[in-house]
Amino acid sequence: MNGGEERGRGTAISVVIPTWRRAATLRRTLDALAAELARFEQELAANAAQSQRRAEVIVVCDGEDAETRALSEGYAALPVQWIFLEQNAGQAAARNAGAARAAGQLLLFLDDDMEALPGLLGTHCEAHARAEADEEGFAFAVGGGIVEAVRPPHRNDTGPPLARP
Image (cartoon, rainbow, N blue to C red; front, side, top):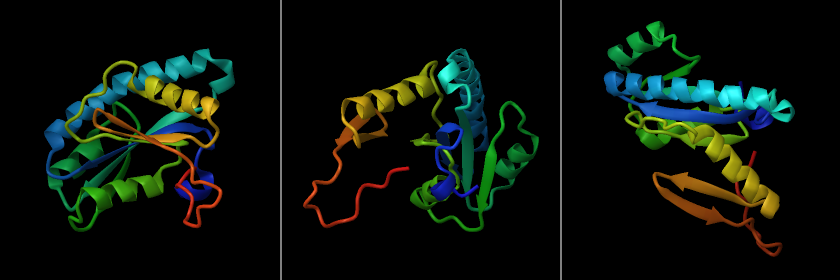
């Protein structure tokens, strides 16, 4: 699915995980995310207004990697969209490939050695919703433990607007 035109239709959040030659740690990341995704889906199902909104997981393998390919063929704990780049192009290229495929209103980038704690997805979505309710057009980027506020461009700004779904 192309993220540009379809972004946000039925999907609350897209989790993008770039990886390369780390199948064992990626499995732990996916297992933790599977448990968190189950909690998140239950929360959404309990809220009738958001019953159609879901999360998706996209793993981008940055170059050929036999162990990650084997993991992709047998992993069943949660639905994952797998993207295999032909050559190692770096973590930024892998993230961009995942973002291009994403359908979610929000993007959450996780590294392949991170384990999702309970509430990660719901808290992330709620923080964005609160920010948007407080100030239309407000968005923020989360990188590791750092939260950076991003304001919409001023009306006299001649540059392109912030990328938003």
